[in-house]
Amino acid sequence: MKDQLRAICSEQILRWPKQATPDAKVPSVVYYDSRGNAMAFGAETEDEDTVIEAEENNWKRADWWKLHLRPSHLPIIRDLQVPPLPPNVTLDKVFIDFLRYIKEQIKKYITETYGSGGNLWDVLSPTMYVILTTPNGWEGAQQNRMRTAAIAAGLVDRDGGRRVRFVTEAEAAILYAVDSGNVEDWLVEDGHLILCDCGGGTVDITGYKINAVKPTLKLEESAASRCYLAGAVFVTQAAQKFFRERLRGTEWADEERLQRIVYHFDRNAKKKFSETDTACYVQLDGHRSIPEKNITRGRLKITKEEMVSFFKGPVDEIKHGLEVAFENGGRLADKVILVGGLASSPYVFSKLVQWGEENGISVSRPDGPTVGTH
Image 1: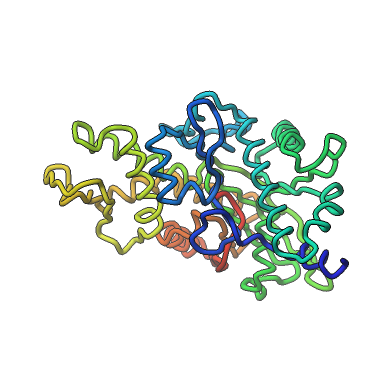
Image 2: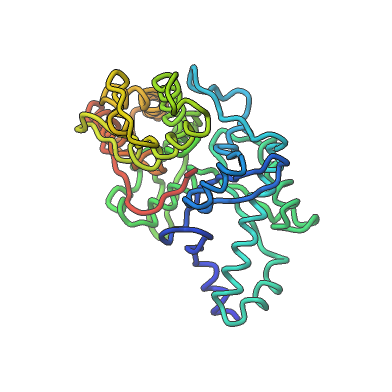
């Protein structure tokens, strides 16, 4: 039992329903029907068969729903907005549904992976601790709603609220980066660095001073943690606005097709775009050409300038946040660790490396799965 417990504590769940390739991360997305019933979660929402079923049955996606919990003092990039929740669905319901799904998958993984998995779950689950990550800017009110949702989802019982703990995404990210071993040579006593977690909805930036390296790594904040609503969703939002205007008056202008176009953009052009590209393409339905709209045989051409405009708001906000952390830390930091999904964008990474070169700061992006919103 002890050996199995140690194994469980060091494991990641790498098998999620409908996942094409094993990955510990799945999208925080839920499909709902018109009555507000949850129909698909996580990797299921990226499965082609599920997407077609959703279109046929008019299911609606709950995307980036955690941003609806944001404190009112956190501003959103101008002219952009958080996607609305589906009809008949509240934010608390999405939290409960998604956390219940997570619990079910944890239980399934343990019971199916270990020979006595069912017994392990029955013995250990009533006393397990649940650790949830939050953006730097989330406060007590946001944590209380998340704790309430965890109880309602059955992750802990009604008397187990104290077993729901919270850690900021910046803290989790710095621990991941250190554990990766890729920034080991940066860990020098009395050194300073900046952690920038570029997630799906938020960008969390914190400056750290390294007080000790051995026998235990000890860090202290040297610049106040800051949270910016400037994550990957806002690149998508800018692109969606562009598609809606460009395709007005065409057969692709209806909302259902538009969402499919945005879906393909997110999975391809958005992830691949780099500063050396002269253009990107998004697949539309059919094979029609409309030269004046840059559509050729069902493919929409997006110029480099147009792609850059989608990224401009988040990139400018990230650079501003890094400058604030750099200044507030007494200009002592000379290293930036980038993590999170948006940081994996070749274009975003190149722009932040360029910012670092202009300010005499090294920028590193540890490889592998990172902490943050997908």
